[in-house]
Image (cartoon, rainbow, N blue to C red; front, top):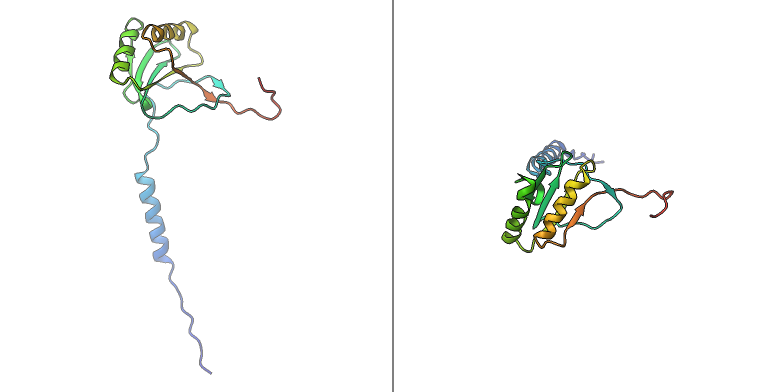
Length: 144
């Protein structure tokens, strides 16, 4: 009776390839860059999504300082309240189809945000989005 020989497959090369692929994808993945102006957004239950590209972001931080930037907030520049109107008009003239997004810190004074909204109205930018953090409603919470 002929004896069967077992074929033994060495798994070491496959494990090496798997780890090399893992390292490759981890090192080439682009993570979200840190924001230059970090704010704590107020909560809401609205689930409207703002596009990630072709946006003009106006940010009001806790101290009431105003910043303007394009998508992702990488090129943020601080604005003085008196020059906000001119900057909004300039940015809108460069990209008239851009969506304007207003990000206000939840601890910012209402006056600073209201002044920026007045500047938007003076710049004939009557449509803009207010950015908030999505707060999921639990089943026990009533709808408001």
